[in-house]
Image (cartoon, rainbow, N blue to C red; front, side, top):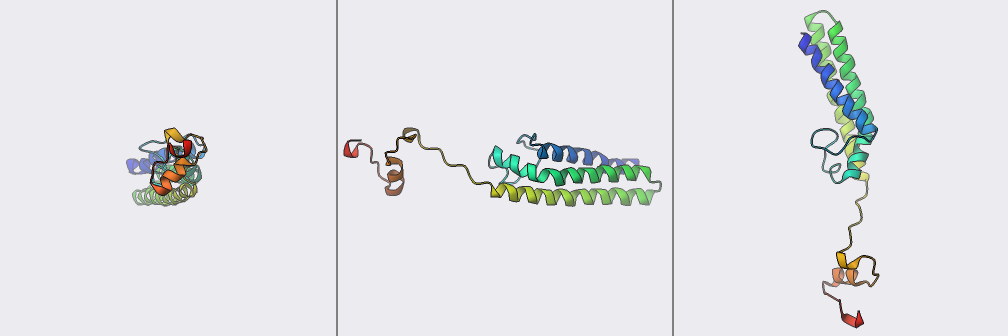
Amino acid sequence: MFVVALVPLVVGLVVGSVGVLGFLERLPRNRFGGVRTPATLRDDETFRVGNKVAGLPIAVAGAVGILGGGLALAITGTAATLVTAVLALVGMVVITGAGGVLGHRAAEAVPEPEPELPAGCKGCQCGGCAITKSVGANVAGVGGE
């Protein structure tokens, strides 16, 4: 039963660390940790915003796991230890899921960045880029340009 009580404790430490790093905006975009949805993975800014919003609930979920695991270690009795460990894990999963939803919604609210202009149209103000897009013709060289 000692191992069963250690599971929420160890998982809580990992989840809590990810939550704190996300909240402090120190969690880099990666393959493994943080809120990983199509909205948050769009770019570095959306990943940062989504994980900042989700950071506090995820850190709380880690604290639930740590406290539940510690309590399960302190309790004597096989059934009580098992029930406490399972409740800690379930609570941690539910709170982490809610934090992930909040982070996803925050990342969706971040506006998409402006697209970069083509190499030949960087700030010339000739209107050729807009005309080319709307008409579909190449207007370079027309009218003395």
